[in-house]
Image 1 (tube, rainbow, N blue to C red):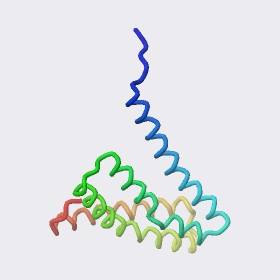
Image 2: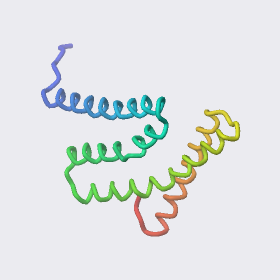
Image 3: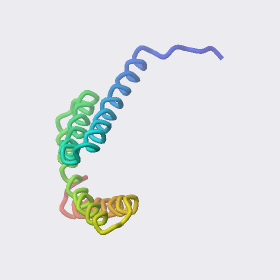
Image 4: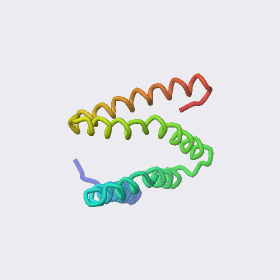
Amino acid sequence: MIATRPSKRHSRYMWYFLTKALLSGLIIAIVSEVAKRQPALGALIASLPLISVLGMIWLWRGKPDALNMAQHSLATFWYVLPSLPMFLLIPALLNRGWSFWVALGLGCVLTILLYSAMIWVAGRMGFDL
């Protein structure tokens, strides 16, 4: 079998993908490092829609379609809402002595249930999430 070199297009795509992954991962690493020293500042950085904004930039570069972007942005808004109670449940459980992993797991289960409810309600209201 003859080995072939990746095409220039493939190589550019891989570098672009790696850039996206590294930048996104860098944000997560910064949040975790800042939060070790200053939990509130780490939370502020984490609460910024940096990943959503980066996602929209990457999406626009890959598919510059205004309708697609509008649908993505609106769906993001609706999906953020059912994720918010997790950030109340986890500290409530931790403050009552529950282990981190159990609190995190229950927070994730709650979020999945609320996502499912959001999809069901949105369908009933005529939204296509």
